[in-house]
View 1: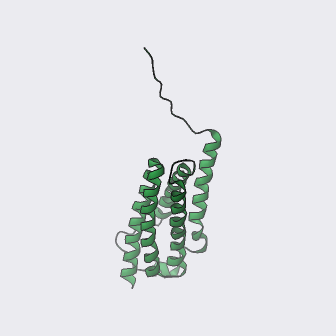
View 2: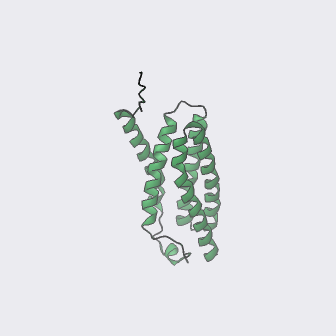
View 3: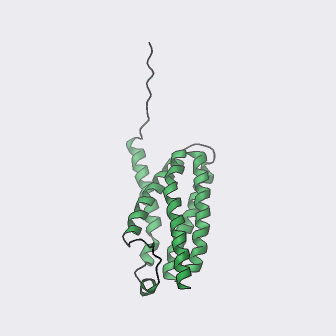
Length: 166
């Protein structure tokens, strides 16, 4: 009787270090706007907030977790040789540009309506990136789902902040 063994290829040490590098890169790029703008301003504190506005601590915790997931997803796509890899990587970079643009637009420019436009475009780009990732690596696409859910919530929150304070 022949036994077939199923082997799962675990990433080697170098690959794990590369994955960590991707996580750090995404986290640094994603967090960079917070160096120049933040919600800790008199303007933002004075805004009327919707009833579902989360506690302040939620934002850095959620974004840190999301950036970890995004970094791992990006690493999975980057190391793949599947068709569509370049398109998926390009889609990721484009959505990340809009992600980074939102924070200074909302907080530094104090422009919630313009930020709403940015986050709506971002939402569409995240959907597109998820679809592109799915064609390359389904695990990578699955790792983007929490990000899509958070961007959806953030868009609703942005809309309500604009609506309540227009």
